[in-house]
Amino acid sequence: MLGGEGESSAFSSTKEAADERRKSPAVEGDGPTPGSRYTEHGVGSDRYYIPPTLSKQSSETANPCSFIPYTPSGTVYNPSGAGRYPSSLHLGSVLPPAGFSPSTAGRSHFSPTYQLGQSTGCLYPPYAGSGSALSNMTLPTTGPGTRAQVYLCNRPLWVKFHRHQTEMIITKQGRRMFPFLSFNIAGLNLTAHYNVFVEVVLADPNHWRFQGGKWVTCGKADNSSQGNKVYIHPESPNTGAHWMRQEISFSKLKLTNNKGTSHSTSQMIVLQSLHKYQPRLHIVEVTEDGVEDINSDIKTQSFTFPETQFIAVTAYQNTDITQLKIDHNPFAKGFRDNYDSMYTAQENDRLTPSPTESPRAHQIVPGARYTMQPFFQDQFVNNLPQNRFYNSERAVPQTNSLLSPQSEDGVSQRWFVTSVQQGGNSTSTSNKLDLTPYEGWGSRAAYQKKVTPSLPWSPRPSPTTGFPDSSEKVKLQIEEEVNSGGGSTSSWTERQPSALSLDKADCYSMACKRRRLSVNGSSTEDSDIKCEDLASAVTNDSAYKEASLSKGMAAYYSFYTNP
DNA sequence: ACGCTCGCATCAGGTGGGAAACGG
DNA sequence: CCGTTTCCCACCTGATGCGAGCGT
Image (cartoon, rainbow, N blue to C red; front, top):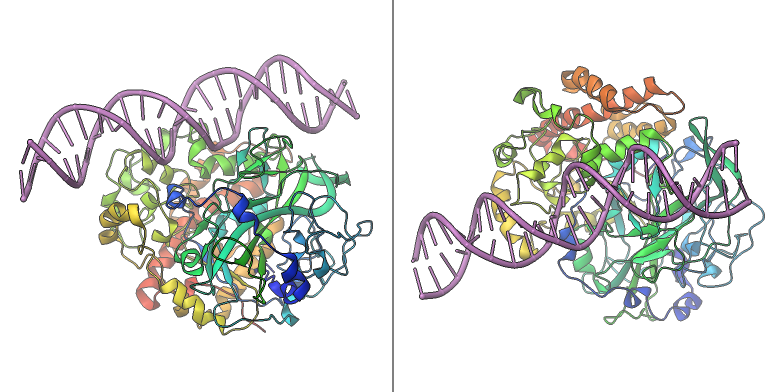
């Protein structure tokens, strides 16, 4: 299943854990930089809601290279560089591969069953497919809003990459992640202070190699790596209200293989090439000055989204991944083969408006594929063309995806992960999502002013409307999408009959034209996928429109429900 | 005259490609 | 020798500064 793992904070229930924590790493990192977040573009608006259910993970255990079920069962050990925030925050229900001894540092006491190494944090996926610990997990609470719920923004994009086994370039000077991590958080105490940070831990104990067009294991991972594994959000610490107000983007997080870099502790995460990693989000309640509140029962909540798993490389191995990066990353536009030709077609045939035209003209088109494009930035959900939009639209250069419910796949689905499986969380979730994304955006007011009038929909529809409805259908669709991970082209987007056929032909030729053959020669599948991807925006846009008109975003907030 | 908005130019920095260098 | 890493390149994005135009 792909759902989201709802990993949680049960570990924090012990007093020992609380006492152990003193100061959040956040205070050691970059200081708060209000507004900086918005200089990054938001990610797509796609957010999938996954309630803390954790039961459906079974289907995906066969292939370790495919999707790893959302489960907290991953085992972790305290990474030397991660300091007090080891992966051990996870509650594991599955024993890790033998050979790894438990870590004694940090919060390892929460992973009594772990047999982990002692170097870097490591999260071993539950290949065995065991049940999720979360499903039976109960979390201590300190009152309403203390159990966080996290949405992985732009999940469709992550899924696209994950289908081909995401690769992330690491360089000495540090390379940003793409897609980057971006979350929406709900369920926090509005007034309490939290530090939010990402930790990257080993996803498995293997060393990987790209051979014969596939990623295959090649010996054991080097567990002796050192270096920072945690990136604290620059706005930490901050109030729950602040964190829930808008997306929490980690777009400036950089990955490096340079252990000696002086920046590694604040901006970069040190990884080893050809190792598989799993990013994890941690939310730690702290005092106003960034010191963890030892009086609080719930200290830390951790969230893992399997689709964000990646293999660190110094050079791309899989050309499919390369193409996806080029297609979706605006900074790589220069590598798009049909960069110019794409805009010579007639307006109706284009996926995006001509760069010379005012994007605003398209923003008002309800459900149009271009509608929200100007609001995207780094993680565009739509394919290539939309990126070009920015060339002509200065007014909204920085976009917060919150403004764009439409995403690459044209939907506003959200994968939601909560630390608890309690359904009652929907309340806080809805509260959070009901917040207008425009509130408190400061300098962005000017942009909002220009844009909002054109928005045909609420920029941030409340999932409340969708949760209750969260039709089983959607739920199943998502599950399938995720489960198709190993290269299967099956995804719910394909099942949307609308518009898909519309541009499929064009998209196919376009994709074939652009695509670079993978070593494995999986051209057929690849082409299908790319076309699917290209068409998905259209398809889902249509679906989005339809749903919006009928019952709001209901159908687009897919989520898993407890069985 | 003043303040605001807009458009253009500039520049720092991000991107993948490819060749060279490195190292087991 | 071969796989991996590093470096440089061209291209692009996006932040910023500046000046022109406009309204008050």
